[in-house]
Image (tube, rainbow, N blue to C red; front, side, top):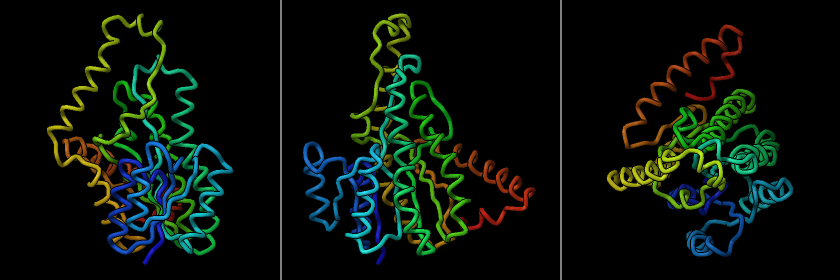
Length: 289
């Protein structure tokens, strides 16, 4: 029996993952910004299934430190941390204000850093642990209208590359999950720009983001396998593997983009190992398969 803490447990990936792990005997706690409002029904369902729910805001350091401490206390320890809380954004990049971008980066990048700083003293002290991260396929490439979101996930990937190596000597393994676009409520909460004057300067092109978004919705409707439950299955499969035998990156995609990203990842993994070998530090990569 292992103890798991999932940030953003009420979200599109968090809920099915929590339910899948609870069904397999894991002890699960998860964070939500608020138990009430839009999360109330999901929180009730998760608690009925056995999850502990912690109110925590990853954009607030004191709240994060308090929330992680409460989770460890309620779980009776911590073996697995799943950095899953996130927020999306969509729109022409020039129209994104610095405040829009800051909001996204504060959740997707600094939020992860706050959680890690709160949880790592415990994991380092016990000399073992598994940390999972929700990234994205567009944390590997950039596509139009997702520039701010991609930037946040590119930054996350870079941070995790460093955590992977810097924590390996403490027995803490790192695993990035890279989903393709999924039909979740994530799309409903996206940060979108509000700059009508600049938008008007784009003329007819200003209508393209909405057209592109509608096309994505149609593609997802036509791809029934592209569902959040696939993320839960990927997490379960990862955690079934022994410490030190999990892959560093796992792509979850059923619309045809995944194989190209996997090919890119394989090349990067080879380049990374070659560079580390030239510096004599390749052993820092050995805690992942």
